Image (tube, rainbow, N blue to C red; front, side, top):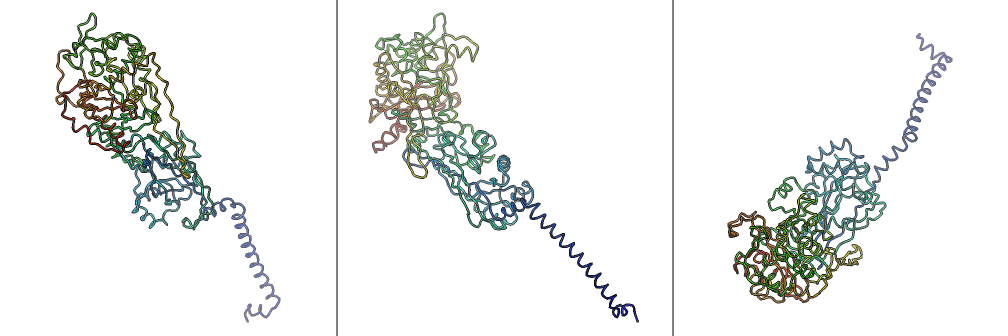
Length: 639
C-alpha cells in the first residue's frame, strides 16, 4: 500500500495538505490583488493628470478659429482682394506618433512639401503651443487631399482643415496698390500682437494689405471639437466666434486703373491720377506689374528668381519709389516762385538764342531747341518750354529760393500717402550738397536745377501732387487710397476724412492764373509743345506741362541724335503733368515713361488717354485713344 493511499485514508494528513494548498493559493491571490491595487493606484492617482489629459485629447480637441480677412473693393464696388475656399494641412506636434521631422519626411511622399514650406512651418511651430495645430501646407490640391485621406490612419496628429486663401482678381493691374499677403515669419510675429495671430497663417506683406493689416486681419476665436480615436472630428461642442476683419473701400477707380496700365503700351513707367478735390488716388500704376497670387501660399524659388532677375523690374513700384529728374515739369513751380519773389515781370520779353553762358565761363548751357525761341515772355516760355528763359530766371532766384519754393510744393519730402515704402526724392540745396557730397554749391548747378535736372529728383506721385496743387491754386489734400471702412457683418461704411495739405498762400493770387493759363497754352496754343500730341479736338480745357529727364549728357558741340539711334538705357525719360477741366478740376495726372524720349510726344498722349478715360466715364461717354492718331504727328521735342 502506497503512502498516498495512506494519506487518503489518514484524514488528519488529508486536512493538513488541503490547508497548505489553500494558504498558498490565498497568498498568491493576495499578491495578485496587491499588484492590481498598486496598478490601479498608479493609473488613477499617481498618473491621474497625465491620463486625464490623454483621454481628453482622444475625445476633445481645442482649435483656434482664424478670423476671415476683410475684403478690398474699388470705389465702384469691384473686388480687388477676396477670399477663396482652400484646404490646408496642419500638424499638432504633441499628437504625432514619432518626431515632427520624421512625420514631415513621410508626408512629403504623398503631398508636395517644399523647403520653403518646411522653413515657414519651423518658424511658426516655435511660436505655437505644441497642443495646437500649425500649418505645413497652406493650399492643397484636390489630388493631395484625396491622397492624404487614403493614408490618414498613418498620420496621427496631422489633419486637413478647410479655410480660405487670398485671391487678387485684378492681378498685375493693381498689384502695386493692393499688394499681397504671405506666410507669417518669425520676423512678422515680432511686430504684431501674438494673441491676435494665434492660428493665423498669412499677413500683409505690401501695398494696402500691409498698410491696413491691423484692420483687415480681425480677431481669432476658438472651438472645442469632439473626435474619435482616429482624431476625426465628430461634432462641435463649444465655440467662441472669431471676429472678421474690416473690409476696405479704396478711392481707386478700377476701370481707370486698367486704362492707365494699358495706356503705357509696351513701355515701362508709372502713372498717378488724383482727385484734386479730396486727394483720393484714382489710379496708381507701375508697369510692368506682377501676379500677386504667386506670393499668397509661398512663391517658388523659380518664380521669385524670374521676377528678381527680370530687367524690367516688375517688383519695383516706380510710382512711389522711382526717383527721377522731373525735367521741365517743374517749370511752373519755379515760375510761381519767381513771380512771388517779384524778380520777373511776366509780360517782359527775354531773348532766347538757344544757349546761355555764365560770367567768366565759356560753357554753353543749351536749350532743348538748339536754334532758340527768340523773344519770349513767361507765358510763352512755359508753353514752348524754353530752357534759356528759365536759366535766366534761376540766376535771379538763386538756389536758396529754388529750394524754398520746391519744398513749398512738397518736393524733397514724402507725400505721406497711406502706402508703404514711399521715397522722398531730392530737392537739393547748399546744405544738402555739403552734407551728402562734402562740396560747395556751384552757379552752374543752379541753372540745371531750375529746369529739373542735376541732383533734383521726384517720384511720379509727387508730380501728380504738384499738378493737383496748381489745379486747386494751392489748396490740395494729402494723397490717400483708403476711401472708407466697411463692416464685414453689417455692410455699414465709415468714410475716411481727407487730410488737407498746408495751403500754399501767395501774396498775389493772380500768379496762379498766370501759370495755369500758360499750362493751358502748352496744349491749346499751336506753338505749345504738346499741342499736336494732346491738344487736338479736346472736349474740355486741359492744362499740362511736358518734361524730359536726361539720363546721359552730350558733349558741348555734339548735335542731339535721333531717339532711335540712342541705346535704350541712355534715352531720356518722358514726363507729363496735367489736370482737367481747367476751370473745375476733376483729375490731376503725373506720367513717367522710362527711356521714352520726348515728354510731349510720348507721355503727353498717355496723360490725355487717362484724363479722357476718367472724364468720359463720368459722363457715360467713350472715345478712341489719342496715342494712335498722334504717334506720327509733329517733330520730336525734348522738354
